[in-house]
Image (cartoon, rainbow, N blue to C red; front, side, top):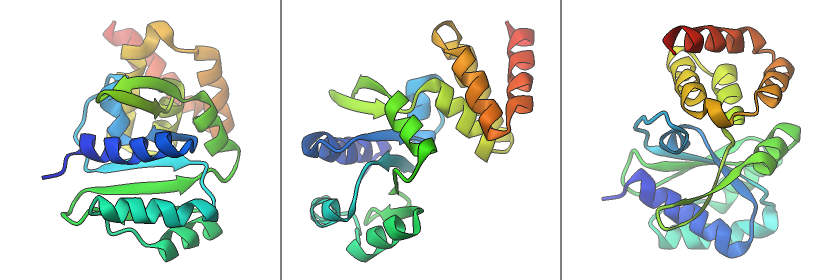
Length: 184
């Protein structure tokens, strides 16, 4: 039976071995950032191009993923993400290429952590908070608040304010500040 941790080991192990820059993002990173929540998908942004696809697909198929070269290439061409299902639902990898400034920031600012006995690159807490505020509803807001509270001593709050302003979610960030202050 697969686990989210096994999927993380699979995809990060491959990218580490191949020297492909990446960052884990999304729900699977929450336990590492201080806001545990269960999830069945592993979201990853990677600096991949079409030349990486055959090797990646071969590797993932050897690990029982239903990977398709055509699907990954289409996602790269369309600058979107590709879902790569594991043979036993609901586990999957959501893979996104690095298509611009947002993805570049995430990869460049990601933190290298020791997790599951290996090196894993994880989005910074600041980027996690900003993205949760950008893409989410109430659960995403609660995740962002939990990350903020647990990471507060080491957060780069100036960067967090800057990125939230650029993303148009500075009002939501102010709500985080208020809620966190009231709970401390």
